[in-house]
Image (cartoon, rainbow, N blue to C red):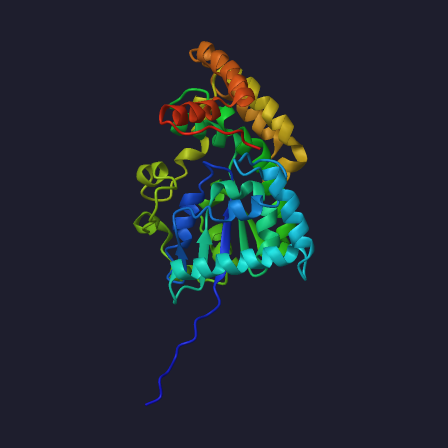
Amino acid sequence: MIEVIEAVQPLVPVFIFSLPRSGSTLLQRILATHSSVATASEPWILLPFLYARRKNGVYAEYGHRTAIKAFEDFTAGLSGGEDEYLRAVEDLALRLYRDRAGPKARYFIDKTPRYHVVSADVVRTFQTGRFIFLWRNPLAVIASMIEVWGNGRWNAYEFDFDLFDGLEGLLEGQRLAGDRGISLRYRDLVSQSPDKRTRLFEHLGLDIGEAQPDAQQDVPLQGRMGDQVGVRAYRELSTEPVMKWRKTLGSPLRKFWCRRYLHWIGRERLQAMGFDLDVLLRDLRRAPTDWRTVPSDAWRMLYGYAVRLLEPWIMLDKFSKLRHGARIRAHA
C-alpha cells in the first residue's frame, strides 16, 4: 500500500503595522475570517532578534552595548554577513508561525503593535512577506489612548515611543515595502463600502467572498495581548469611533499639544499616511473647547516630562528586588 503524503504549502507571513489604537486587532480579525488565514493574538517574538542589531533602546544586565560589538564581529564573519543573520531569523519565525498555524493555513498574520519601530527591519527580513500599513487619524489615536488607557486623563507621555519613534519607523517600512506592501486607513476599514477591504484581500491573493468580515468578533484570539475594548464595543463594523476624538481633545492644552504634534509629523508625512495637515488642523480647531481638564492636564504634562527623564519604574524594580533580598545591578 502506497502512502500518499500531502505536501504542505509554503506559509506566507503577513504583518500588520500600525500605531496602537489604530484598529489593527479589528483588521486582524477580519482577515482571519478567511479559512486560509491563521493568526495569534500578538506574538512579539521578533523584537529581541531585531533589537539585537540596535545600539540603542535596550538596557540589560548582560551589557547590551558590549553585546552589539560581539554581534557585529560575529556576523561580519558569516558567509552572507548580517543578511545571513536575518535569513536565520526568518527561518526560525516561519517555523514557529507554521507550528502555530497548522498544516492547512496559507497565511499567518503577525500583528504586534510595537513592530512599528522595526517595520523596515521586518520588511528586509521576510522576503516572501506581505505587509499591511494601517493608518488612523493621529488625533483619534491620541484620544483613544487617553480614553482606553488613561480613563480620560492625559497620558500621551506614556506613548512617546509609539507616537514619535513608531510613526517614523512605520513610514520607513512603508517606503521599503514597495509593491509588497499596501496602505489602508481605518476609516476605509470600517466603511460601509467594501471596496477597500476587497482590494486588501486581493493584495493577499484571497477571495473576500470566502471571508465573513462582519463575523470578525467570532474569531478566537488566544493570548493575553490584543485589544478587547473595541471588539466588545462594536459587534459589527462601525464608523462611530471615527470622530469620537473631538470630545476627548477639547481641552486647550490638549489642542495645543496636538497642534504641535501634527506640525511635527508635517504635511509630507501626513500625505503618505493618507491625511491632510490643513484638514486635521481645521478639525482640531473646530472641536468644542472644554476647560474642565486643564488643571489636571497641566500637572500631568509636567509629570510626564519627569517620568520620561527619570524612568522611575527602573528604581521601583530595584527596590522590589531589595525587598526580596536579591542583588541589584547596573543596566548597560
